[in-house]
Amino acid sequence: MNTDQQAMLDAVGILIQRARARARDAGGAVIEDELQAAGFLDIVDATGSYLDAALIVEAVAREPVALPIAWRAMLAPFLGLGSMRVAPWRAGHEEPTRFGEDVEALLVIDEPNDRLALVQRADCGVRHAGSGWGYPMAWLVPRGAGRAIARSAGGALALWRLGLALELVGCAGGAFAQTVTYVREREQFGKPIGSHQAIKHRLAQLAVDLEGARYLAFQAAYHAPDAELAASAATRATLVGAMVFREAHQMHGAIGYTREFALSGWTTRLRALGKELGGTSAHAIAVTRARFSGAAERGVIQ
Image 1 (cartoon, rainbow, N blue to C red):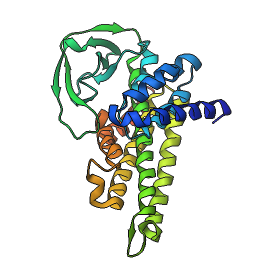
Image 2: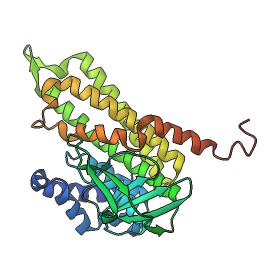
Image 3: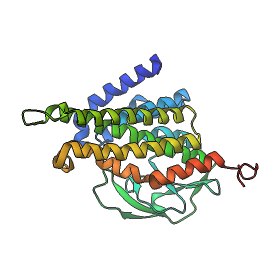
Image 4: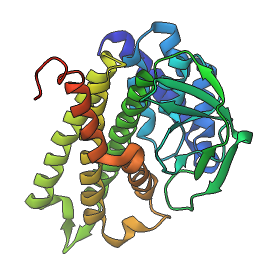
């Protein structure tokens, strides 16, 4: 990270701290408005660097609030949509969509036919997907062809995966930091539970796994949009997110599952993010397809 990027992150941190007290009541909207007003959500247009946007996405995802930070900071600039609230949707796949009830339009990604289209929310079927996801979720089904967008469907899908990996890493990092704080303060039999060697070993392993997932995500951002690197980052991030979810809840005990306790602000989101775009197996398959696309024609695969 260079000095300009560090200064950028410091400024983002100040904005988040300023908005944090209000954001607990207003969700992520306050933080999003602050970042938008300061121009950080359009950093790709300003610098041409997806890595700069990735640093911001990962930092914001560490906060225990929900906002479509990756879509706005990484996918929207690629499509030239500005501040329009859009949710991506894969043609031929049925899964609930984050912020599905709040978006202005649905971005339909038809990768096999290399087609992108924007379908207005009024032209979509909308069904509430229930609560407990950490995000407002809805089932959306486009009813029309929508307006075609002259950009690569593969590129859009790669940026979606990359943003997902960054949100997972940031969210898992927030849950990890909360867990470290908790085990330092929570006492049993007269001493903090974090003083036990077994807890220290497990936390150390999580720290190593998190740093590896973060590196993969930033590497993919540096080369974005790259389908193979984005899928690799998403594969690792979903695995690490699941590990952090499990370990964080084990170390917190039953209180970690209550909505009143801070941990749920991260782990409910980890649950939703871990299933998006098909989860770990689907990301791993995407790595294979990207790596060996065209290999059969070249005689590499018989």
